[in-house]
Length: 124
Image 1 (cartoon, rainbow, N blue to C red):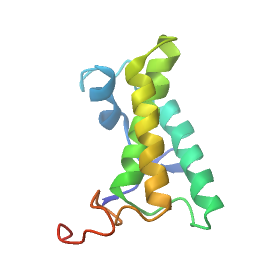
Image 2 (image 1 turned 180 degrees about the vertical axis):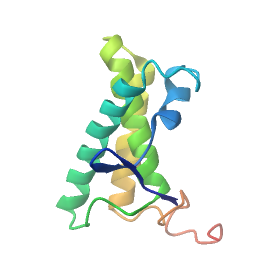
Image 3 (image 1 turned 90 degrees about the vertical axis):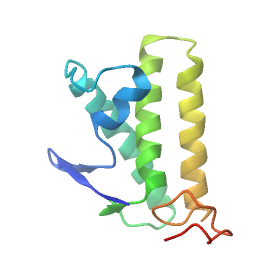
């Protein structure tokens, strides 16, 4: 698990540095950081909405890996889709994000891991 990061007036589940490798932007290139931050904010708002519908208090103060990667993947998908109308990677990222979030909400993953709930042998 990772702790949340404060940006502006809110908390975010991921940061631009997490998203950049998925969208082929070098870590040192800050020219897209504001845009990526906006996509992260949108992704996190969607995640919070889904969590609240399940009765989970948001924003999360400790971020499970599945939530962090849902934010990263949703943000990367939106960045790519904004530039290309038919982007296979963007659709894959969005599908994988939805799968992670849905899995988290139904208890498929332990908090902070990607180990399936029925297999606790890999949980430290």
